[in-house]
Each structure stands twice: as C-alpha cells, then as structure tokens.
Image 1 (cartoon, one colour):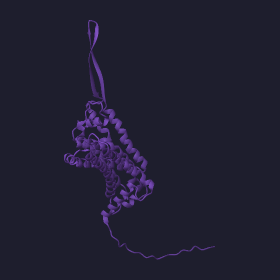
Image 2 (tube, helix red, strand yellow):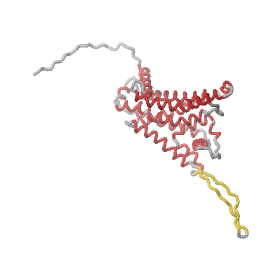
Image 3 (cartoon, one colour):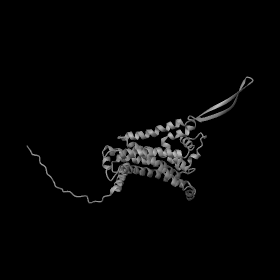
Image 4 (cartoon, helix red, strand yellow):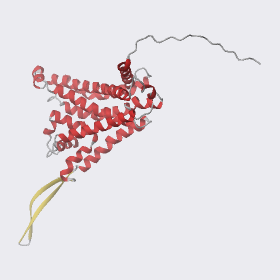
Length: 329
C-alpha cells in the first residue's frame, strides 16, 4: 500500500509595495474594463463582430452621404436633425444589445460583490459602467455628424461662408448627440439591472420602443371625410359643394398621445434645437408619420417635451442606481 506524500514550500509572505491608486483609480480601471467589454477587446473574434458591425451601420448613412457629395452634385446640404432621425433606431438597437454585456455577466459570475467593496461604492460602479457606454455611443454619434458637416461643406459653393453662416450647427449637433446618447444609454442599462438573461433585457427594450410607436400613431391618427350638400328644386336634386372635414381620433388630446412614442422622445428635443419642426406642413399629403408627430409636439408648451424626456431618463437612471445600492455585499 503506497503512502500519500506531500511537500510544503515556505514561500514566505511579502507586503504589497506597489502604488495604491485609491477610489479614483478603481473607477478608472472599471471604466476601461467597460470600454473594452463594449468593443469586445481582449476577447475572441466573435465578440468583436457585433460591436464592429453596429458601429459601421451607425456611421454608414453619413459616410455614404459624404461620398455622394464628393462625387455627385446634390441640390442642397442635409439637415443634421434628419440624420439623427435616420440613426436613432440604429442607436437604440445597438444599445439594447450591447448594454446587458456591461452588467449581467458581473452579477451572474459573482464579480459585482467583489467590486462593491471599499473604496469602490455602488454609485462608482454604476457611474463607471454608464459613462463608459455613454462615451462609446457618443463618439459614434458625433463621428456621423462630423461626416455630415464635411459633406455640407463640400456641397457649398463657398465653404468658409457656409461655415460662418451655420457655425451654430456644431454646438447644436453636439448637444443633440448628448441628448440622444444619454437616452439610449440609461434605459437599456436600467433594464439590464433587473434581469439575469441578456436576451430578455435586449428583447424588453426593443419591444418597448416598437410597441409604443404604433400605439402613439393610432391614438393621434388623422381622419378625413367629405360632406356634400344637395338641394331639391322642382323635384330635381342638384349637387352642391363638397367640403372635406378632417380631425383626429382623440381630438385636441392627439398632441399629448404623440408623446407615447417613447423612442422619439429625444427627437422631439432635437427637432426643437434645429427648428426643423417649424418646416413641417400637415396639409401636404407627402408628410410622413415622423414629421406629423414632430409638428404635433410643437403645439405643446416647450416645457412638456423637455419634462417628458427628463422623466424617461431620470426615472430609469434612479432605478438603476437604487438596484445596485440595495444589493447586499
């Protein structure tokens, strides 16, 4: 019968003599980790496919417009608000899919309890994850808008004169980028804080935006009917003038029901920044649903769409912070 043998090595104990970064360094390291997680850095090629693909899709409309403006003469420069309209849905999809990667694996693997110790607090953790995601989405958004600005300069006969006349578009599209990125960053992260499955979090966010769009359109839909007057003289019926009567299903409340389209909440503010909503003519048959909704929102007091946007951002933001502050370490 063989006897088990073992060896014990006395390696000694040494104190850590390296630098101690403290709370700020811990937050910064967590921010870098979040940045790498979003882009799939440090992982296999499959982890990088989706972030790279979504990034290219967000920038693609502006890049195509830039190439076309350099090759083919276009009638007039494009509006920055129109390109925000084009990529808003893409940003929502990007955020809904990527955001759960920042929070759910940490909780499922028990890493969160290791993070939430001194000097790192729950607020620090949420701030680091949220700001890392915000930074990536904001950079993608502003790159797209810078490409639009370059394309507009190429289309202008006198680029310097165009820039002098429209230089306010630069702070406007930067502020608009902050508005839309804060929106698409906060809500998906808040949803991801309350589920352990990444697919469930992404599906819930996408469904919330998809379902509210037709609901809002239905409640604010316009109806029209023709009324014709007839007169009877000497037993003969003669047709009079025809008048078209139009209205909305919910009457004067239609402009309020337009706000139910959650995904368009940042676009209402962006249109007001660029004053694009004032150009919408509801009488024109060519007006699409987005333009009609934007025009209806302009009938509301300015404070209403601002307050609605703040509620949709601050509400989920507070829930996200509360969720991690209530976690037991």
